[in-house]
Amino acid sequence: MDADTTTGTDDRRVVLEVDDLRVTFSRAGRRIHAVNGLSYRLYAGRMLAIIGESGSGKSVSVRALMGLLPPSAFIAGSARLAGTELVGMSEKEMRRIRGDEIAMVFQDPARSLNPTMSVGAQITEAIRTKSTIDRKAAAARAVELLKLVRLPAAERRFHEYPHQLSGGMRQRVMIAIALASNPKVLIADEATTALDVTTQAQIMELLVDLQDRLGTAVIMISHDLGLAASYADEVLVMYGGRAVEHAATDTLFRNVRMPYTKALLGAIPQLTTPPHSMLTVIGGHPPDLSALPPGCAFAPRCPRATARCAERPPLDEHEPGHRYACWHPVMPGVELETPADGVPAEDVELDDAEQLRTEGHVAAPPTLLTAGVIPSEDRVPTKREQA
Image (cartoon, rainbow, N blue to C red; front, side, top):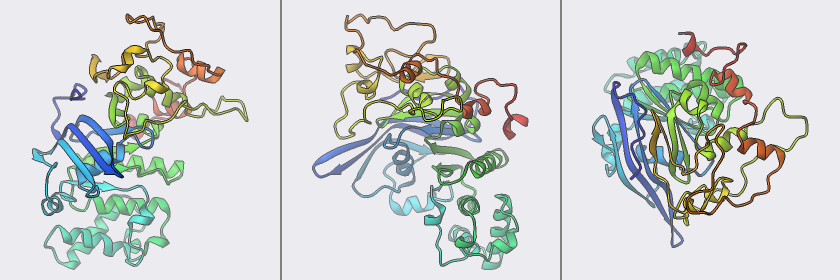
């Protein structure tokens, strides 16, 4: 079992506790291990960002909490929401929890909203499904929610249809629907991926504001490290269905230890890169979840890998509030020594950009400069920092 990935915030109220969560799919005679022993705690009024490549298990892990996986999924472990066990809960029981206690905002609002119903009718339906108030009171509550998510001209938008709204407006409507029953936990599953950068920032500022005002705990699923650095309180990095690094946001980005996290940062395009230069990529391929290696899943792609990596490293707290699963963590100024097993890392030919990335000399990405993770006199502070 992976160690619990708390980050020293035990004075806060735990609303969600995930312990050794495992999700397996059976397909064509193969067992696909999508999530492998994921553990973490989510605190009231906090935002946890779960980061990783496509296929790392981010979305599957939260859909398992919501009971939204197909029948072919086998879920094991524990997930306790305010003391109530979610794993093994029947669909009838889950319907009572879903929306009231935990809600989700999906990636593409255009596909999530019903194009044949007005915005107001869809929010009203969500409200009346979970309460006994009449239609008029539900409509008034729907307008309040539209104002809460800062949708301009809320009374007029109430009568409009999804195709009449912009992408950002549609996502605000989805957030309003998710908040209809004041859930304790709100999951934003790639909720800003389909939006432009300006609208992304507006939606994230909205989530932070709602989190502060309502005390809602937020799980942000994303592959965007810049968004995580700007808005999350904690960051959990997943690879091959496992958590490989977890710490408070500032701690993680200032002291990246897991080579995979370092590689993700190195792959962010930079304004300082000369025109027409090749983008830095992470070499190799993501792991086959039906045939995971016995040790570290990142070892086949890791330039620091040694024979010791055939043994899976535990996710332990190696530094105060900072957990990572790596036998050879990235330590600035410390060269990788030949391990006790006497087998050095494999010789890997790297181009100049890749060499800079793996040695930690790559310039700070612009997104992280503006996020405040890396000091800059000219950066614009986020609303949370201004407060």
